[in-house]
Amino acid sequence: MQEQQKITKIPFWRSLRLKFALSYVALIVAVLGLLNTYPIFVSQDMVFKAKLTSLQNQAAVIASTVASMEELTQEGVTQVMEVLDESSMNRILVADQNGLILYDSDSGQSERSDEPRYAMMQELVLALEGSDVFQSTYSAGAFRSSGAVPVQYRNATIGGVYLYEYDSEQGAIITGLQQNLMRISLLLLALALLISVFLSRTMTRPIIRLTAGISGLRQGEYSTRVEVSGRDELAMLATAFNDMTERLEKTDEMRRRFVSDASHELKTPLASIKLLTDSIAQNENMDSETIRDFVQDIGTEADRLVRITEKLLALTRMDNAPHGQAERSSVDLVNVISDALHMLTPLADQRNISIHLILAQNCRVMASADEMYQVVFNLVENAIKYNVNDGKIWIRVRRSADSAFLIVEDTGIGIPQEDRARIFERFYRVDKARSREAGGTGLGLSIVHDTVVANGGAIRVDARPEGGTVFIVQLPLAQEHKTEGESGT
Image (cartoon, rainbow, N blue to C red; front, side, top):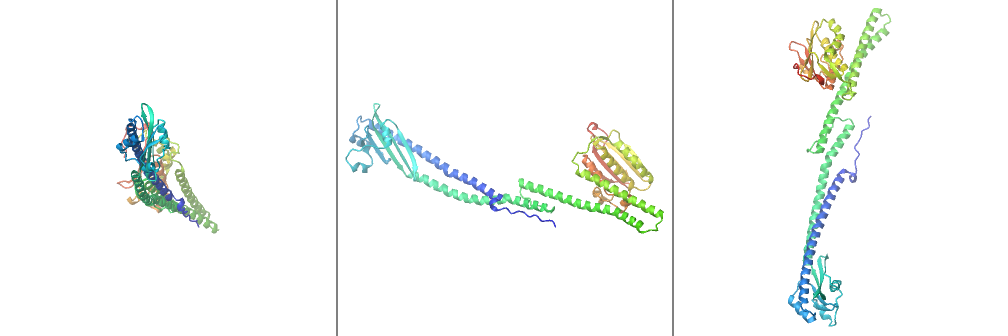
């Protein structure tokens, strides 16, 4: 008993579905990561630039106003700063050239001691050395900006101005933007997970169906078909698979029928030979004339076996040979007909069947001479075997601009309409009793059909109005003989 093959179940963590889903999720996570970082960075950068510009402008105003005093004193600087009213800054320091703080907007620092205080901020130290220093950072939901510029009088540094701003309002805007983007991202991520699961299932479902179909095909279930949905590449693959299984099913059916028919055809002559030999062996008193008749019958059945075997081998060679393997050359149909009639005329004479030839000259086709001989021989042989006594056969060769036509017409028993579509099937015979009596195998027309098609031609069968059958073979002319000529049928 043939062991049935089952589909190996793939663990989910190794499945294509999970890989598809993870791919979608990874892509969405990358997009959401960009969505959560890029807008924040851009917003922060815009705020940084605005802060630094504001600090530069305010520091420049304070420095230029203080510089007009020529000599920096605590009272004078305090009066100037009260006039300027820079309340937007959290802290403003003004120091002289020695770093002594003359003004500090942080009143708490000013009231702690009356002792002189010196500025220790790095920015202010650099400003006293003649440099402009500005910086801005964002952390803990707030912007911290600081800057310092020198106070110059007649190109000499006489002091410095230090500004510091703590802005939590714009920091709250950035924090809110981050939180909103995070909420949106989580929502989109959850939605992406659902979509990825749906898409992965949708994309892998046809693959699973194809896998199941292939498994059934491996077990010989050629009737297996898969559902085709959509118009994408997977749908095309499913359609191709269904077409393949349909052809395999037809081929397997033909193979089974062929084996059955071949076995039956071979069994009949073998049974006759067995019966005749047993009769001779078991009858010791059989006269010599009867034995001679039996031996002749055995020879007839043996000849029939030989014919069946030869034609089966011919069909097998055609089935197994690659397309175009036979050596082809320019073959003259008239010469092929002459060779075939040389062998078949004695058979026609036995039944007083006349053969009439109407042959156009220079009808050469690209084919194998042996294959064309088989075509002509089988068609004319059938016309003789299935003809009536004193019947007639017409063999015509015509041509058109690019095709040659071989027409074999007889006055025989004819082929019923319902059987014409199947006469080129192997072992199919219209009248089996008449075929066996005539020595037919049911393979001749199959050989003719396969040979004609393999050489790029076509064949059809029609009924003769006056009774009988007409076979029409169309073959392409050899290239050098494709000229205007007589019209074909």
